[in-house]
Length: 487
Ligand SMILES: [Zn+2]
Image (cartoon, rainbow, N blue to C red; front, top):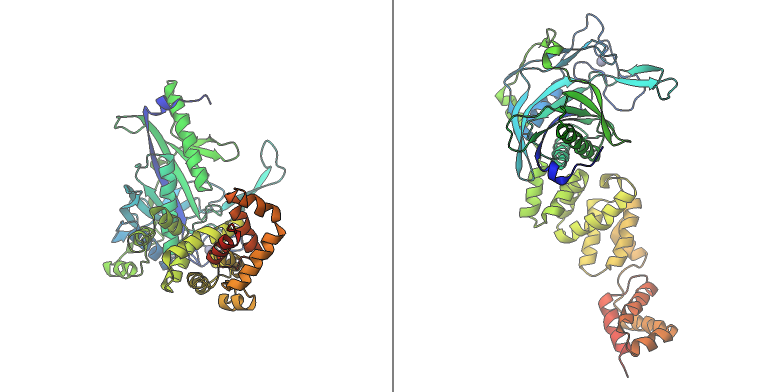
């Protein structure tokens, strides 16, 4: 695709709306008792209801509705007093009934909003529906694709909450941040595990462009198949460029569904987009309409945990964290919960943040894990931070201790005692070490004395190395200066 200059790009405005499907984390499916656990043997979690046998009747899982209401409240939505399910008809091998039970004109939640970097993004609706199954392509694979497909119905009937934004997102980056915040919210609520790779949180993006100043929306294309936040941003970036390119050449954007091809970094046409009337929606006759009492909604509201935006605000205004630090902590839920427990133990907030975002984050990244899966407890970290604050262990020693505790756990105070890790402040012992270092490096001493003061750091380093990082740095500095002073 030929390059589009920034000048051309600036003539257009990008309009994005996101449809996010969150798989609700209930033990059983939305309309039957089959289990929902991910990664089980194909077709091992099915029953006549989710397989769509004739004569069976769906029964709504109450927990599903409760999760939808809780999420709706967190997204500042109005919760419907009366709601119902509808049938959406279409044929596909992964849909055994040939219709999907969804919600059409009376969703559980509507008219909500969240804030992204201070900008309000309105949420049109959040409605419940059942998931479809999954095709497993098999047989010889080649350029023409596989020779046949199998179908796994384990996912059929897993509860989904589809959260539909208004087309108010105006850049690929904003779309990514919006999606990240939705993920934070459903994870903090405990209603969805937010795993993009496993598909428990999926996103379709409706993308269009229009010349700056035009009020009417351009024709949109729907993009699917983005399995990471990075892919979401890249796919929209590509799609915006593609549409500008078309319009600049006097062509038209076609309303269609496009597939993101991660390997090639492009979107390709998949099928023309259906309109709502193609689905022949009608009220689901096998389920009674839902009556949602204000009292029940009130009780659900009382179970609302601290939401990501509130936590961020508290970290900044009450704990004095920078916006950057607050954001990083909150965006990693496990880390934020851990941090909350550590500071409850009366540790220095700043030191706790530095350790969590420094050495501990580096360790977690390297080992591709989260803090709750390590052996480190808030108690042991608090204990270590207190020993540093009291000057009993040095930072250098703490760096070693924290890795040991992350890997094997254990009592930090005992570890310091047993392994003899406390800081050496005994002057005569440090002085002996300094003398030894100076004696074995006569050349460096000579150069230092003849006007190379930058060698001072070398001597400090040698003394710290010799003492295994345990010497009190201030004492080392003072005694070294004394020893190196011209006689
Ligand atoms: Zn079932």
